[in-house]
Image (cartoon, rainbow, N blue to C red; front, side, top):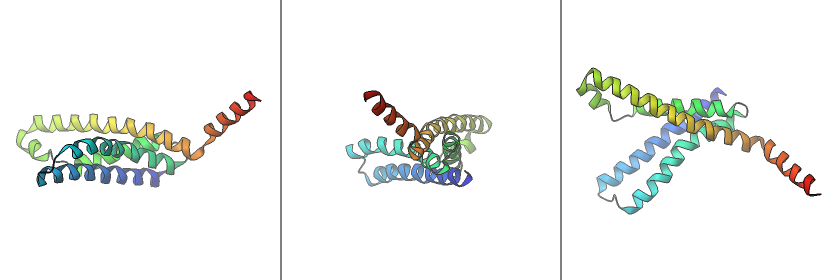
Length: 143
């Protein structure tokens, strides 16, 4: 399960960094047009759901926990290492540190909840148990 959590956390960090880098690249090039606005929402959705799904798929058991921890860790790593808010933290002093820590906690936990849901979906699709049982019950009930 540790491998699944680490792989999901790396996926979360890479996807979050790539989505923000794409947005900044478009803004820097002056091509921040309608296509970037349309594409950014699905990319951020995939970036928030795919790490938990990958962790849940790889974990096999306890996919919800693996998805939660992978997304939580990925968001903390991304926000802590690649975060662009550190300059405002250093300028604002203690209140900046408090607000940034509070923001980090709420953001990481919300990504963790998304990751838990997608991790459960990954575990369900890998096991396919509920889907097979549901299909078997439908066939038996119709006969």
